[in-house]
Image (cartoon, rainbow, N blue to C red; front, top):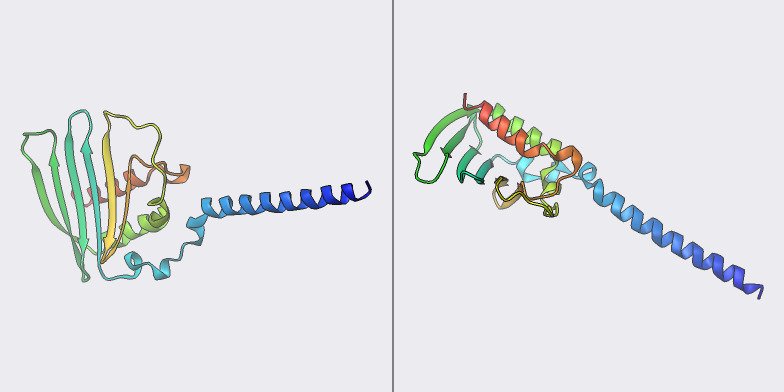
Length: 172
């Protein structure tokens, strides 16, 4: 009988180590945006970048698209299309913006750590009458896409709005 308490302590130690390992795994999973290395990210260090914002559907079935395209140089192209409902006239604009717009969109990319957000799980509850908003960042063969049907962490809930607001600010 004297060996039973030693066995119980060993078993308890193994269980505590397993629990600590699992807790550490989930902690690192939740905080991986803090450990992401931007030095190796082609969307930050590359000479080209494409950021596309789309709002599709909803109760009125609208379609809005904003696309910022940068291929190096001193300026970038910003294309805007908006169709409020099927059959309505599509409003289109093309504007050349400074490379400053690209740096600001890269700041939003860094702030919200888009490569990590692209792995978020889908939301369980989706409003059927709300439009689907999708933001895609790409450069070369690297593409990250996020949308309004994903469950974002609390600190990143405004990412879709931030991208739309920034791109729309260059249209005026």
